[in-house]
Amino acid sequence: MTSRFLRLGVNIDHVATIRNARGGDAPSPVRAAQIAQEAGADGITAHLREDRRHIRDEDIAALLENIAVPLNFEMAATDEMHAIALRHKPHAVCLVPERREERTTEGGLGVVQDQNRLAAFIAPLKETGSRVSMFIEADPKQIEASAKIGAAVVELHTGAMCEAHLQGDFAARDQHLARITEGARIADGLGLEVHAGHGLDFETAPMAAAIPEVVELNIGHFLIGEAIFSGLPEAIARMRAVMNTARPAAGV
Ligand code: PXP
Image: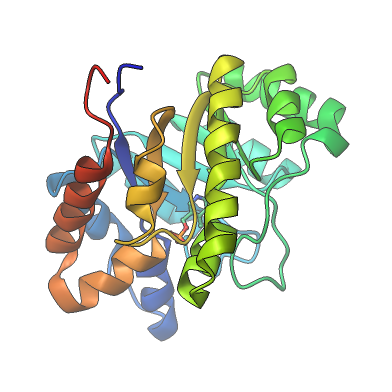
């Protein structure tokens, strides 16, 4: 299979987390997005959570005004977020499950269980030109349901794989990776564009990058943390390099 270009989406949510810790304007998520863009990010991802714990409404408007690369707007499938997405018309909308008490997005969206509502939810977003993505576990049923309701993209959740890797449980990690690899193949066969993300770092991003059907990785927490030590451009450049090294060669 000919290898496709692999994009890197940089999630800048946790720049906002640090800003919010002191209540002022610094560090600026827009500045981080601009630096990420210059350092080679192919897109910027931001998640406007119901509780606004990191990105806030005004950040979305500022990002859209001040970055040239596409914005991937992550949100829960709620009426409030629907109205915001329809107003801003971002390049991409990624629907994620959201629970207030969670520390981060745990698990994937239940597309199978909520097909009719989600089909009606995404139709107007598609009409305004946003590419709609479903953040799901690599479960064939969730992938098939995503295709059925008209999503353009699935983002496969790599959180459990990354957690197993961090715990040193490499057998479990490899099982998760095999499932994600198979899920990517199924999704691609159904005409869905395949992305992957959550918890990726310099060791696990190459595993996702090696899956030929995956064309975008969305990475946030690790890169922002790494930026504290090396600077954001260096963290992004190194991520890009490990992704490139792992990518199957073109024409293979
Ligand atoms: N992709 C999606 C859909 C997410 O919800 C998140 C976390 O907001 C990420 C990617 C990035 O995850 P991390 O911050 O762990 O790299």
